[in-house]
Image (cartoon, rainbow, N blue to C red; front, side, top):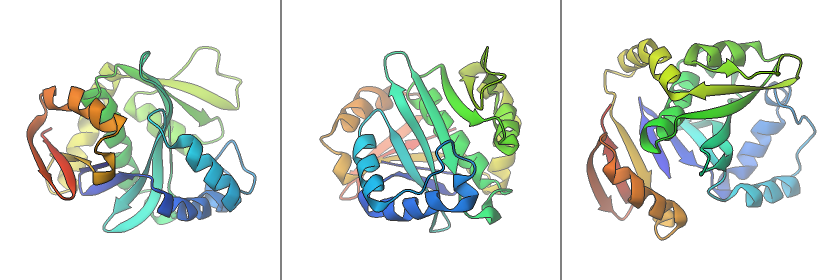
Amino acid sequence: MKYTKFGVTIVRLKKEDIELVRQWRNSPQVAERMEYREYITPEMQNTWFKSISNMNNLYFVIIYEGEKMGVINVKDIDWETRKLESGIFIPDEKYWGTFVPSIVSIMLTQMFFRIFGWDHYYAHILKTNERAIQYNKSLGYELCEGQEENENQLYILRKETFETKSKKLLKALAVISGGDTSAIYQLEPEDIGTELEQFVKDNLPNIPWVTRIEENEQGRFYFLSE
């Protein structure tokens, strides 16, 4: 699965990328911002990858200008109650103050709100991660009741709040990326015949943002308007 917008692509994590992700995850600048901070071995990484290779966990590698540069994810997805938790890490500090984290966060949020039809979801943020708290609040995240004293705090993002809060940011991102607000959602060949393909067949063609559908040896492409 791939999703491209504003010149950035997120592609679902594959086994060939888990060693790179392990190196990123073990780097001090990433580990110190995580709840789990112990060293991750290759064996631990393989076990973890097997545990998240399902429709309840969607992990994506972020690609910008041809370079793999981070991970964004949604995990513990409950498709019935439409609840999930999200996270992102980018090891190279040169990207932290750029528009890339904003783009991928909005892309993933729009995927669930506009394509999958959800109305809210949750995210845990460390109380000490002031940068993440400030950014997520700018998108409309609100601290859940009773979380004030927790180290790993639970936030909620509602669709209507996100749509209101993100308008200015979306306009700015469109200008930065050259004015094109369209997107492409791609099912790769390995996705065909899976539960994911069936889910997409049942939902995506009926979404008003889908302008056309194409298929070739690289997979099935859904072209989306803003």
